[in-house]
Image (cartoon, rainbow, N blue to C red):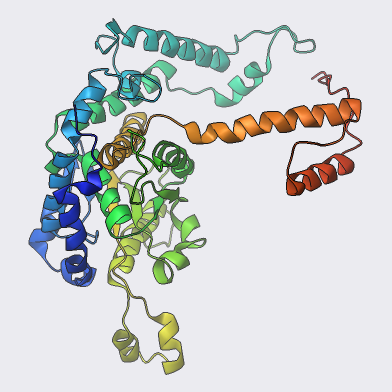
Length: 441
């Protein structure tokens, strides 16, 4: 068993704290001029390329982070998760997301039972339902549908020449490939471990609470919100797994948008406002390449030009001296100066097929787990969402009593009572009998 002491009490944590000032003296312009350093910060697995040379970190920083991982018993915690131990101690549960990615013949035990067959029972049901939606055989008895449910109509729109079975399987194989990579690869070349350690460095040592997730593909428009939920719900904790209040900040504020949408939304803040570490996600092969006559490059090359340029713009910035040489008016120089030295990392995927998307999701899942393991928190419970739910039950009862019986609002503070009163008055036309008859289609 790992020690219950806080990670911030260990010597590696203290060494990293002392190391911060040394790193802050170095600008990314200088760090990126060191080819040997940059080479050491490239990692490739299965045609996925990770480049973290634009992080505010030196090789010494990375080594100190590995020492922190050892002090946190990271490898032991990973092994315990994969072996099905009840590492979710507050709920006395195993953590089995790797079982969701496993092939049928894999054995992953929890409480002495192989859970993989149960997973595949559900996956088979999902596949069966998806196929019935696509081929129009999904059935229901709602009047007016002539024996076909709404899924039949959606099925006509969703029908694809790609086999559903082949697409679950490819996605799962991709996720499973990262599961094995995460479990077996040394930390120096382990993509989820490196990403998790860099997040620890940015949040707990450099003091950057947020992270922007920036996929340069519209097909990944829901990726950032998905990671936002997974990361902030998992690691938004204020106490250790042993219930001890944390004397340091944990968790990240995650947000993001695809490529050029984000550039015209919040990149101004990232370039010249607050420092927000960025994850740039690019794709080599476009899903829909378009080559227009007269254009210098294809639509995808245009998109990827921004992918490559933005990370360098954040790192290098633009100095007042450069602007003077460009004959920029003196009164505009402060407005057009970019400090640079803003950290980012780049992930380059070979394509966006089901296999690669499975890999991408698994990378971020394991990154979240690494952060929690290092911080010493329980990433696998979500008690924070329960309080609001329980309070909502009280409000729900009050709304029902006020609407159906005219009972006065009671048991709430003045502010909530005032707001509830206004809400009930303004919505008094809502019928007390809330039964609704759905129209025929």
